[in-house]
Amino acid sequence: MSRVQAGASVIEVIKPGLLDSVQDGGRPGQAAMALSRGGAMDRDAMALANALVGNGGDEAVLEMTGPGPELRFHCDAWIACVGAQHRIIRRDTKAGAKANASDRGVPLPTHRPVFVAAGGVLRWQVPELGWRSWLAVAGGLSLAQVLGSRSAHLAANLGPGRLLAGDRLALVDEAESMARQRAEKVLGTAPALSRRAWPAWLIADPLPRGWPIIELPVLAGRHFGALSSQARDALLGQTWTVGSQSNRQGLRLHGQPLDTRALPQLASEPVSVGTVQLPPAGEPVILLAEHQTTGGYPRVLEVASAAAPLLAQAGAGCRVRLHLIGLDEADRLAQQQVREFDLRLRAVRQACGDPSDPVQDTLSSEEGRPQ
Image 1 (tube, rainbow, N blue to C red):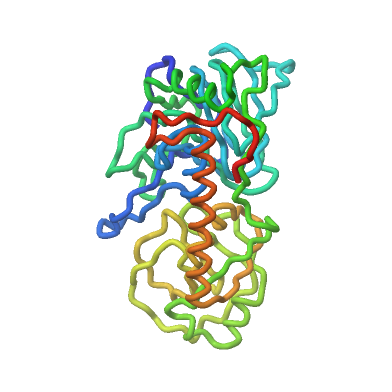
Image 2 (image 1 turned 135 degrees about the horizontal axis):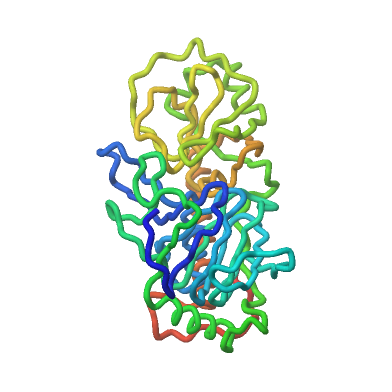
């Protein structure tokens, strides 16, 4: 992670979380260079976090996996965290001051915009539900682009890398003025620590119903028919467990291994997000944002595109059930997802400001909760 000089518009990493990285919409169209798109594991959640602070949908955000970081804000900031149900604790100290036992802190809410005054230190605890979250800051992060993106592609060692203690993330020069202006529009008054510094409404979280059990709709893959009937029944009939070796490249599922002896030997061919490969050991792997662009293992299933956000919340120990559907049902689910996301995004932009229309008056009323 590149360093910047200490200054007004900076976020300092005091302590990194399990895996924190800068992400945006990734690098589409680079498969010819053997580079998968990468980017945020849930681009819808990223867009909603950005909308809550008045940004465009593809501004770079922090993606947090599991227990999150401890960050010091060296300037006033208008932030929003969307995804897992994190408990966030704020303590207010001067830069360089150390925490002590008397710093009890103040809990901050997620899934809505929140004003953080300069000097505030935020700590993301282990999520109570879910696995990943996306933190947006009004104005966005001021990082150099690599191949058209600010995101870290960890598998390819491209971009800013994972967050480390001592990293300083530069915000845009106008971040502090944006924070106060946008907070005042949403709250209807100048933000202050003496009052609640967030609206009463919130948006719904993107967590799968029944988490940590995740029901995944899947389509028959290119080599599904090569499986024996017993192997197909075992693939779809059991509940798989997400392994601890899972990462942004893929989910490793553990369970009763399938008999793969009858499967053909294959040349490598293109794969994509949601491809379910079956290695010789007989336990499936679901490819994620930083997947390899080609693979030689049989492609037995493809996760329906509408279920991509569910994959982002599958942490180690989660249980996964695979439900076979047809193309018509996959199309219906995709169209439903787009409609619901558009409605939520429109409601958030109405409440928090539309970056494409800077003269629009945002709502200061706390009536009418965005969903």
